[in-house]
Image 1 (cartoon, rainbow, N blue to C red):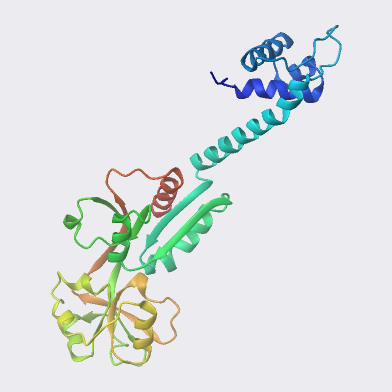
Image 2: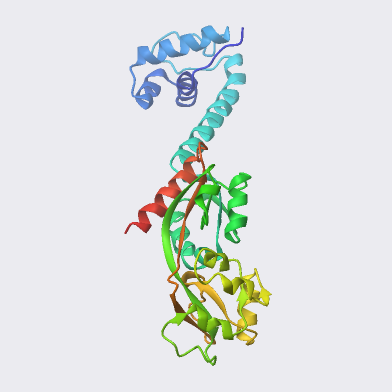
Length: 297
């Protein structure tokens, strides 16, 4: 039968061997000398061999037997392996190690998450984060396929996703985006019918208008552009106008402006999306809690 070693006994053995005495090893272990002697005897019983030579006096130095000399590096190896695993698991439990995978819509990915993630990983050098940004449909699909631990997206029709939980955190109003030299640029607010006289470019967030009175706009769009960089380029070139949530509008644009859509008043809700009945890793769970705590301030 294979012997089952106790890490504590192995530590006692190594300390006695390195310190050359049971008394000093007992001080190191904060135990009595008889307790250390019993620990070593139990270890020798499991090994079936003596690890220390018989001492003629209690004051004599503890010397390893040939078997003990062979066993010492093995004992150190077992202790080191145990300590590495214990440390890794402690770091994971304390969200300071591990691997988090998350996906987010580009607006939150670019305007909110950089500062949040910087704060979160500040004291976690062993924590790895894989981050994907895409439209809400793609984020939801990644959550479904368990490619990510959780997502940050809009859930357009919650009843269509019974397998997911959605916790709204951020919200932003829909507005019209056009060049600063466009005829609409000086308006403080816009009625959707005003847009019928202009070339409309739809995008991934345009479906937010589906259940509103502005839904006819979607059938009149001449262009559909899913990529935000391409969409901004088309707008800057004067190809047309579009609607975007406030967070999706480039903050420091020198060429474009954002005009709130007054009628209808449409608000996008963005939040955390997770699979039901699927536990998060300690690190991912800690990040979710961190995001929620920051959002509530």
